[in-house]
Image (cartoon, rainbow, N blue to C red; front, side, top):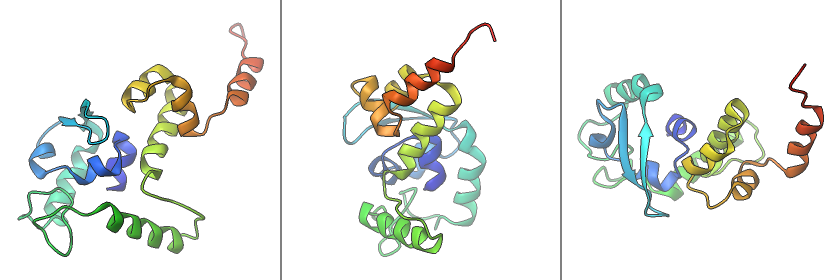
Length: 155
């Protein structure tokens, strides 16, 4: 689940809503985002090996859900169950806070740091504006201005 979140930027509700057939043997997957109702194409190329390994070693092989509930494999893992898992992980790692949006925000922040392509990130996250995206990933206007202060295209 963690890898899926940080590689795709999906909301946890969309990750948990995935079925095995959505991703098995695929390099791309088309989904409709639960919150926005918008179509989104997922690039699974970087996740292919992890998906294969997960399906072979960890998935029960019977549930249609990619991440089935441990209590009832006819249902997918619930958001609150995932939140509890994240809190236990945070406590174990002595982290102050991680929540269900941590994966999506980590994707956004990392994507921006590596590409600096705010327009593409805004579209990937389905945000309405660049300012929403900047706030979401924790990049403030001052940081942008600071980077511009030091920018010299001839150095």
